[in-house]
Amino acid sequence: MEEVETTLAKLLPEGVSFALSDPRAEADGLLPEEVAHIARAVPKRKREFAAGRRAARVALAKLGQGPHPILAAPSRAPVWPEGFIGSISHCDDICIAICAHLTRFTSLGCDVEELAPMSDAVAEAVTTPRERDWLKTQDALQPVHVFSAKEALYKALFPVTGRMTGFADVTILPDGAGGVFGELVSSQPPFAAGQRFTLLSASLQAHVLHMCFIS
Image (cartoon, rainbow, N blue to C red):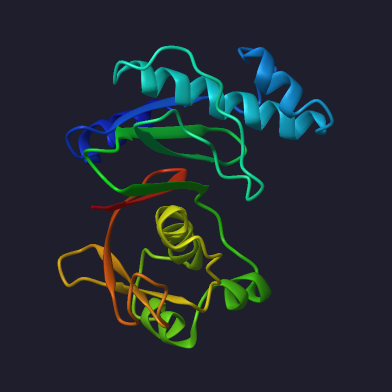
């Protein structure tokens, strides 16, 4: 967790706060409204939900927001306090929340994944032929890197477009400077086909991180 925390502190732009928590811990630290919101969830879902809300409240507190229930919309996206935006992501051993004032960005998205090989079937489902051709030329990058980049971009896009994005709707490609960008294959109003979005990324010892910010 320390490596992820150090990386985020260096990678995130000014005005974006973050916090980490452990999704394996007990589902505590919830406000009454949140407890009621997940009353029928299975234990694993409760632990993940609680970890995300604990991290989100710490990140929001750094921006001056006091304790506030963070429920989930029908899409399962977090409902943030008025004037704030954020994103929550978790894998089996770590949960990340990043937040900012709405005056700083229109939307943002983050994703964390464990750095592990994908099966051929899963890799083919989450990547396009163009991405697979690109990955063949890379030594360090794997399909999980593309998957994580798409997840971060999807989370940033959804609050703006209101549309669920499929894995074939976005192409992840190198930016020529050691990073990657996402390009829309088809239009998603207000964004046109071909619109590009810069992604911040890091490949760590055990995790892959991606973040996307829409102004």
